[in-house]
Amino acid sequence: MTGVPLYDIAHSRAGDKGNRLNLSLIPYDPAHYSLLAEQVTEERVLALFRHRGATSCRRYDLPLLHAFNFIVEDALEGGVNGSLNLDGHGKTNSFRLLALEVALPS
Image 1 (tube, one colour):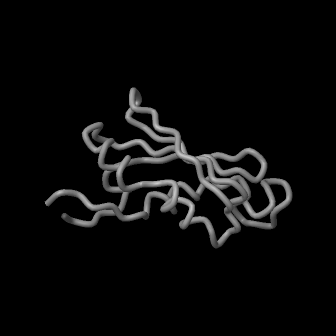
Image 2: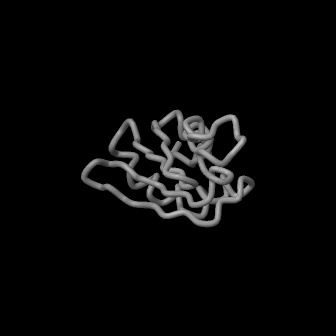
């Protein structure tokens, strides 16, 4: 197995609703969908944002689209209108997800 960052095999977009972060994850190659399903878990994504106060993460699998949607609660430090965070809308948080390393078969 070889470790690679997600940005080598997938893309992502981020959005917000109040204090809730919404992240998509879509592999470039649909063949990587099952690999991502195994390795990019709710727990791993929550750990990426726990330092910002995130309290939970839900993953929605979209197998017909070969995609995932993650909802991370309390990740925007009080919400888009209540935070002094420089990235209040969470748009750059997709790259934090894409920096996560996964293992690919050699």
